[in-house]
Amino acid sequence: MPKRKRPDADADAEQNALLPQKRHYRQRAHANPFSDHALSYPSSPRAFNWAELYPAFAASAKTPEFADVGCGFGGLLIALAPLFPDTLMLGMEIRVQVSQYVQDRIAALRATSAPQPGSTSPAPYQNVSIVRANSMKFTPNYFPKHSLSAMFFLFPDPHFKSRKHKARIISPTLLAEYAYVLKPGGIVYTITDVQDLHEWMKTHLEDFPLFQYVSEEDLRGEGKGPILDAVYASTEEGKKVERNKGDKWLACFRRIEVSRD
Image 1 (tube, rainbow, N blue to C red):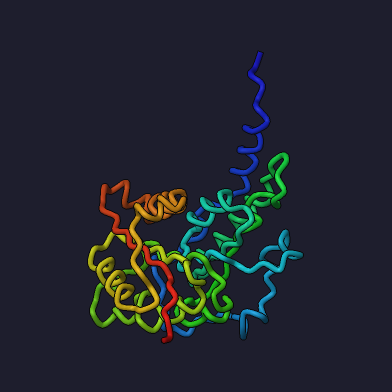
Image 2: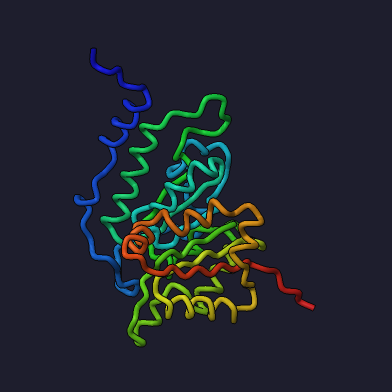
């Protein structure tokens, strides 16, 4: 007698059949943030209709709290979504094909994921979405002041040449924008396999008066261990570094208030 398939095995098979395949979404590893990309963006956060991205939360008036800047293929978003089912998360990705892949991936996961029995939260993956956006130019167009509790910069383009350093995603000008959209107590998570870039990001964050270094040990003590685990291991780049037995350099900073006395 043939073995009877488990219901969850059937669900997994259906989900895998619907998930997009990366080979159909080929694109260069990086994009020039200074190019004139054909992008549409809101004139202000108030002008953006979040219900289009998070229909299950349309009645809640919520806005995203987690922002994955340069989210790539969406590994972090997919890893964190079930851990924080009531927290809206937004990926920002400038590359056309990659952002389309993440959009299709989220749509497939939403279509094949049923709500957990007894849960008061919407069905899985309703809390994650993506926009194709140039975060170096338009971050304040999407997020209200002090609205984010976490920003992620995971394995960003290192821009090795000195003349390209102006294109790095961490700079004094951009840190002012990140400080604006982060609520006090919010965390900036950075990780890279390039030590020079790690030192660059860490130094710029240390020099900025609204950010204060926080150790991995302290964050884990605050219950943020699952977030850190996802930061280390959930992205395509992170997995590639593990396969190649490379180093990963983590630096996290807390958004602080500064007295105006």
